[in-house]
Image 1 (tube, helix red, strand yellow):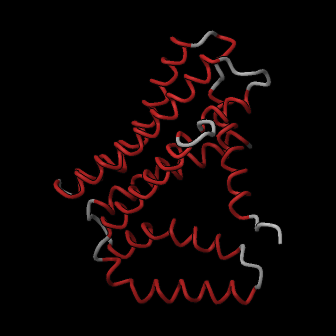
Image 2: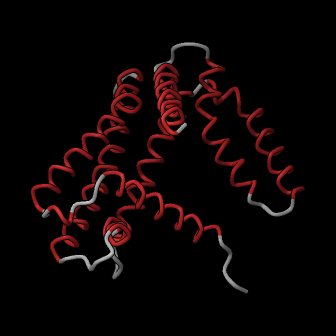
Length: 220
């Protein structure tokens, strides 16, 4: 079942990438492209509304979102590339801020905290330095990719921007992971190197706990 689920997720992701590229390039049916572009935003809003306690407020929120969507639909379908650009920019800036803000102040860097979740023993000074530098590298990557996306969106044809944003972003992230792996092998001894599965699990735990901290109301 796990293999089928992962395969299904991979196929769904591939279909999304193709649909995003087609819509960003201005090809195909405008209404379908618009629907695909706004689907993540609408889904995120609905999930946020689902956490609102009174059911009447949930229903009212859903109706407001659907009403705004219907009202803005003519403008949205005329600016499909802009919708995808704002999503791409927003995700990269949010991730850049998420990684980068952990480098500020007295607290530990994000990947340092994740490393402490993987290793039960105390981290060496070498490991702390490495994880802080990796956090910085990912911060720079996200902001640099956002900058490249903006330059291409402003100055290049939509199809060229879409190749970068929709087709190359995934491989670029994979390349970053590969560079990080090679860097890790070069600077850390074997007992201080986590596996990829350990890194993914640590990131998921960090994200889940952050979500709980954000959504849990403070005590009265």
